[in-house]
Image (tube, rainbow, N blue to C red; front, side, top):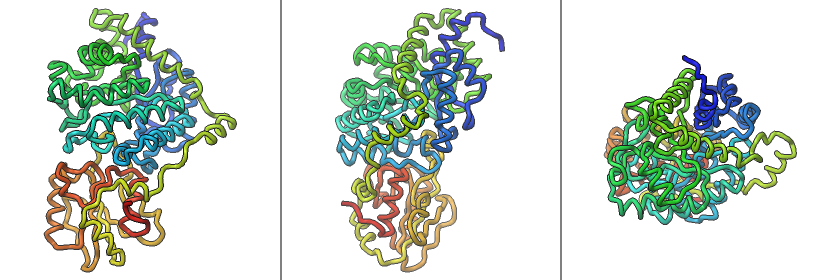
Length: 502
């Protein structure tokens, strides 16, 4: 790779970039780039194995560049990075939305912020404020507070206030709204084909509330919204980012891209060109992806510098972006390296109450009459079948469902993990059976398995741990999430070791 002679320009470029990396220790090249002006890093589940390890990692990053942005996605439900190995101890947005108590939402976000502050992380790429108006949405679902604009707006604002009360920066996502799509932007370029009036009354309402609540940042989505810009996805649209977000909505904070290695951003052009387009459109901080190599990073930097030299990207626009990011990273100095005993003790004293009890979580579940009857037969032998379904790429490989928490209950709990495309499970006579899955209505093989089991006239209920189908007919219980906390509440309900829904 050729070396650049314009060190000032290279510093500006680096000041807008947020790469990921492999492993639980920062590579030497990341530390060197931080010392030379890199904005920060984005951490993923593969970078975190324990709280102590994360604190040491964050400390090394801050030592390389005091005030570096250390960002991750800690949504407090199915999407978790702090608790990637076991699942989140928090309820998640859809459960909070069903409770519809903004004080609980504030408290949940405050608890997450306290964890992040103690870990040394400075920015949470959350909350999701998309309105999940499409039950077929494969990537938002229970990450959303709900399907009603006012509800999502109110809880999104409460979540932002709770998180930022701890000194951790919030980033509301995914602008201008990813909820009414039927595709996943990790894998394709979704199209939100809604009229302009509906976009203003529905999609944009939570972002207006987020801005009013003082969110430090807003994340773009890699989706096409023809009513706003028929040619450019939101991440690359000046009409959406400059005219709408900056102009009409008055946002003055940092505009962050969703990961540029997603297909919706770079599937056809590659990450370097996507980075140039994002900066030119008005993005300030570019999430590059989960596993950026030194060679890839150098290529991105040099391609952006070439774009400036060729007049494809103005140096002023680049400088504006780097300045906004600099103000963001310098706005929370108290987050840097909370390593001393005094600071640890202070964090413990100010930490909010523990997450809610499992009985309170179960109160958010929806139960059919058949489910209530099934639960009433608690003296019958119980068998739980958990479908081994893959989550979307935002969630990753986080443990979920009864199988992930069965060891927490005393005695033997019969939880069998099965495949929807495998042999039909055999259920002994006289056994009540619960079939547990996520996104059951989104998988043809899962729908088929449910139909086949119901034909056998078993003592069967079906549990959906994701977002339910439009008519809700496929499942008897819906938990609206699959975090560790929610999974524990479900297992206790199914086995009769805790009270049912209130």
